[in-house]
Length: 551
Image (cartoon, rainbow, N blue to C red; front, side, top):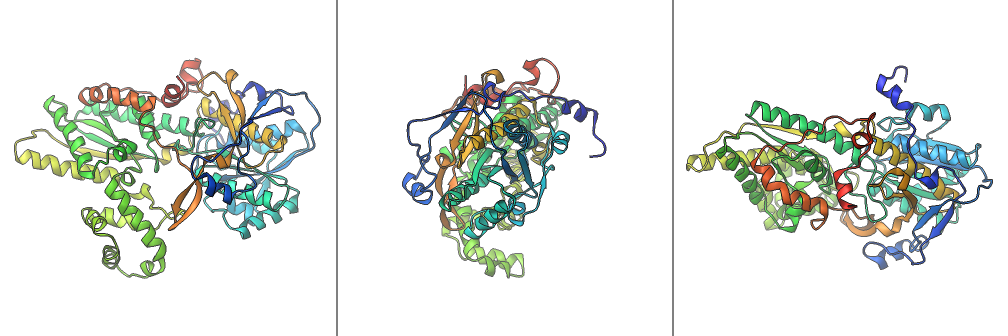
């Protein structure tokens, strides 16, 4: 990097805060729970698949007596989509292993898991690390979505590690990436390779969490970026008073981002996918709900407003979820035949002829553009790429159609002019907030502590995050604790279970209590940009979600 911004130069001097136990790298005293842990679901199936790493205890670190430690040779990969703070995880890992022994080395494998298999790496030195501290993005070594899941791949990883004397690997990724880390750890243990595997929880979606993993890194920064943009749109809407803005937000499998941004900005409406599923709401019912808000505001003279829509909404609507499940299975089993079809009409006929009657009816009710988006290439896990489905435009079209129908009958007299937005990539590589800079650095340091303690098959865990960092604790949670069996590519496979919005939790309760007032009035909140310098209450607060969950 030949030139950096003034902000980046200032941020380079920021020293992330650590949990007290990590401030002097030990070795640490490792407290292990006395109870054998179980997976979150399907315990017998998970235990059968992971016999060498299942049932490990949860660990917590405390200060120990300083003692010499042999040099560590570790490798690190960034896996999956970007999330703010990834560079600080690597910085924390580097500082942690070199604090244990100055001769420790860190191999950065390029482009994600593929770099690990292809032995494509750089040595991460202090000069390289220093250039990336507190910066956004994953560009220090790049990321990738290659899956590590076959024994041939695992064997190649072992060969490459042994070539360099690497005895530990750290996988920085989301639920699917850490599922692969869990499988890799099991293989390493089964083959007695002596290579440790530790994961770190990454995803802006916020769906990789549990009692021990209170939040995935990047969620704080990304939701603050999106909330700034939503606040700007709300200010514009309240100024011009002529547009309804429908904003789709990232979050394929859960609505944590949409809920957090709603709590930060108070839009006129927000659809929470988990509530749609719980109430078995149809697409028609969702459209009627939104149209009714538009009509009620028009009667108050407000022909404008803001609606937040989660990216993965369409998968939570019961008839659409069934349809997508059938499409995923169909296109997994008939991939070659489908790919060879020459025209869109041929593809539509192919699909319609193989769907169940209810799914065929649901599919046929959708606009042609949405039908084609549902049939596009699947992601590496065999699922529909919902970020390409323009749900916000689908809702605008259907709400508009219903309002015109009401207008013809005299039931609606307002105006409905619209703008659509999709906020996703804008937040994934932002410069991390102070919270994420601190949290990520702590996660990397914790990963180093887990390696020093000889642990494998664990995810780094920094806890008590709604409190000041002086009260944070550190430890590790077995990867198998988070596993369950799910349908992938037409087969049942072990994966880390995604954490959905809890409808009986405090964050959703806060939303439910206030949404009627937010729908009627203009109670918009304008968070503004992320602040890095100033009072702690301005610069360091965690998300509203985390604060409410731990209140």
